Structure formats: C-alpha cells, structure tokens
Length: 316
Image 1: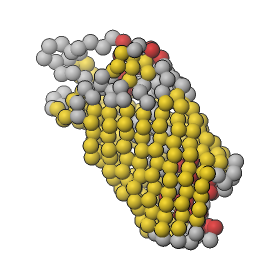
Image 2: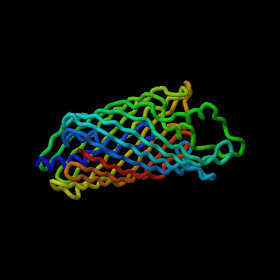
Image 3: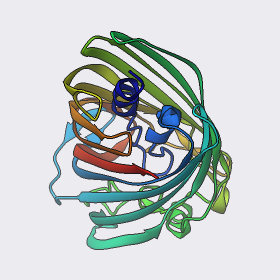
Image 4: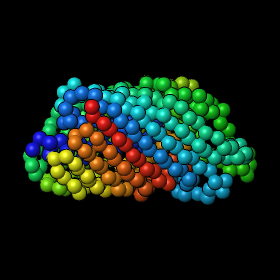
C-alpha cells in the first residue's frame, strides 16, 4: 500500500511550472516529500520557439523573419528533511539565438550563460491517501538571486524609434538578458486529487520582483498550470500518466527609472499533452509540449509559437 501511494503521488503531483525565462523555476520537487528524506537531483529543459510578431494582441506581418529560440536548462539539487518538508537549489543555464531588425538593420546573434539561481523551501501541509483516493496540498517559497548577466538590459537606456519605413524590432534587451539584476521573491502552491485512475492537478507560482540593474524592474509574474489526467499504468513499482495540461502566464509592464516599458506586458494560455513516469520511488520523468491558445500582449513583441519540456529527477 505504501509503495503504491508513493508511485501515485510521485508522478501526478509534479508540476512543471516553467514558462517565463527570468522568473519561473522548475518546481517538481515541491511535492516530493512523500518520497522520504534525503538528497535528490534533477535536470529540466524547456525549449521555446518565438516566430510570430504581435502588436497589442494582433498578429502582424513578420517581413524580416524575426525570431528567437530559447533553451533553458535547469539543474536542481534538493534535500528533504522530512517526508513533507525540504529545500531545493536551482541553477538555470540559458541559450538564446535570435534574429531581429535593429534600427533598420538585420542583426543575428546569441546569448548564453548562467541565469538567476534560486533557493526555495517546499512544504506539504495536507496529504490524504487510500487505495482509491489521494489528495495533497503543497506550498513553496524562496528567493531568486541576481547571478545572471543583466548587461543586455542596458539597451533599454538608448532605444530609439526605427528610421522611417524600417521595421520595428520585436526583440529587445529585456528579452535577451540572462538575469534581472534583482533579488526577487517566489511563492507558490499546488494541489493534486485522484479517484482511482483519474486525477486532477493544478499549480501556480508568483514572482515578486524588485528593482535591479540599470534602474530596471521586471513586472511581477504569475504562472500557472494544471488539468485532468489518467493513470495509464499503476502498480507498486511503476506509474505512467497522461495529462491534458493547460498552462499560462500573466505579466504586467516592466519599469525603467519610473517609466513603464510598454512592450513588456503579456497574458498567455497554452494547451498540450504531458506524460509523467515514475519508477520504484527513485526515478521520475516528464515530457510535455505546449501550443498557444491565446496570447494578448502590449505594443509590439515576438511571441511563442510552441515549446517542449522534459525533466528527470533521481532520489538517492
């Protein structure tokens, strides 16, 4: 019975909150307290392709083929002090390749390096489980530290309108910076409910941003995900589940020296399948894809066309 319960909770409670490049952390470990005490380590990857230009939520021609490919690889190391309380350190490595129209000239380049690391604590105040039912509620809180290179933000200080007749850039310094240069707070929560082989899970994470380098302050950011699923394989050693995952993000306008940055607000909704696998209470893995259902942005921005996610966690 105990091994059976571990298998159910280990996979289905995991929440891949991993959307905004500079704010969200991979938070699968926040609900892993049920796997016992000790050390765990993992790797999470999200690849996003941006290839659509939108102005105030309306698609516009991308005549200069502006685009950005963003890869975020997060290395996580955690320790569970008890079956319900633990801490996790996360270090993201970011690579962005881009093509943009800057002052009437096509520019291609890339940015790579360490992003902003984070340290969070996760706690599970409620967990109820029987052979046919499960309910778990999880909490998360911590800080993000300014370890990523924020030098690209300096572009915001000297931005000027493009020459007459030239195409405006949809990719700016705040999009390419590897870090925010600020100390930020992170809070989050998730729930998981199961009845026999059917389950529902949902999670949300909120980033509280402070003013960072170049007197630039990223807006607070809310990310969320969840949806119904089914346990395809369920026994004492192995669990395999399939979920219809709905995810989204809401972010206001950034601020530069007291002036709102008009091209930074966005509200998006994505939908896609997600597979979750667990083996022997030790190995857990996730694979998912997200496709935009609705994206409402401010001013002119390059927005995502699709993204794929994968993660692996091992409990020692």
